[in-house]
Amino acid sequence: MDVEQSQTTSELSRAINNFTALKIRLDTEPLLDKIELFLRGSKVVIQQNEKTGKIEPVKIPLGKKKANELGVQGILNFVSSIINAQAVQGNFKFETYENFIEELQIELTVLLVNNCYNWDIDDDDIDLVINFIMYLSIPFMSRTVDNKERESYGETIKTIESNLLRAGKGANLFNNAG
Image (tube, rainbow, N blue to C red; front, side, top):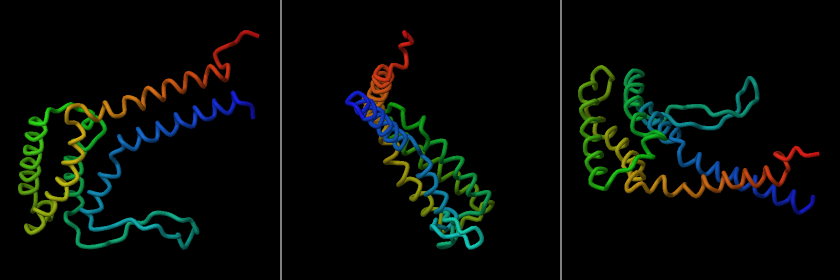
């Protein structure tokens, strides 16, 4: 492999790594999955399927469910309106962030109290559910303060664009002269 190919490979590899880092920062599924598993009273383990022999993730009960199916969906719908890739790219001043967090806790509490009987949430579990969701939401939403989230990955995006352009030029993808 010559130097030009090596440099192109290195640049493409760096772009892929930067894209992966950006995806990790914007992917909210792991947080939402944690909340869902908590509400369902379960955890995910990796097991071998006895019939197919394939290794696959399986949800197993870990404790008591915090809500029925309707409650899990209602809570996840509410939470996903806050924990998402668009919301984390917001720009809050610290005071606005504090007000948002306060309002979030109030609205979450009202949602759970108003629906606790329809969603089979024990009165003793309401605070536990609120705290679990808030302790994940507070640091997540803190990323919006003073636009630091977008600033922090701005360089990553520039690197991806720069690397892709250089890789294309180095591989003569745009030079059709023959």
